[in-house]
Image (tube, one colour):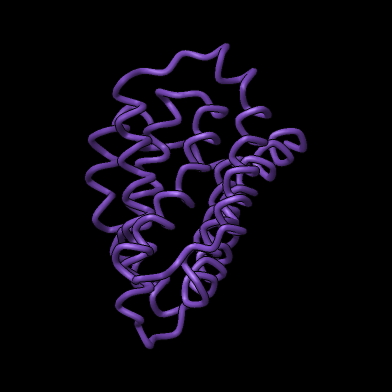
Length: 187
């Protein structure tokens, strides 16, 4: 449910900040997770990990600079985006700390189901003018992508990585902007 809430926050933030700024914010997550893991999980962060995160963040800052400097961002968008990133970091560390002994598919099914039901009224209130969409190929293709690739596939991978090591799992978020730019170019 928490991840679905975070996905909704990210959707809200995209209306108020540019994709480049969003990509830059994603790179803050590994640092927040590393800090929280150090505090809550007593995990030492190696110098090599810090150097890797800093190099990746600098590279993404350079890559996203043009889209950041040319865009507008509202204060509300920045606040929503910041809350989303901090929430995701807290959820990642919490998931590792409680060490659920359930299969990832069970966790994913419950979070998506409960989150979807809870978010229906919120979505209706925030997106009233777009709530009843026309059923067409674009909607169907988007739903298939979001359900099977994003909600099921990537979340199963995410839970697997979190069970291994929260800090290493979150360093993969540095790849998000790269894949985002590739997908943007393709589609």
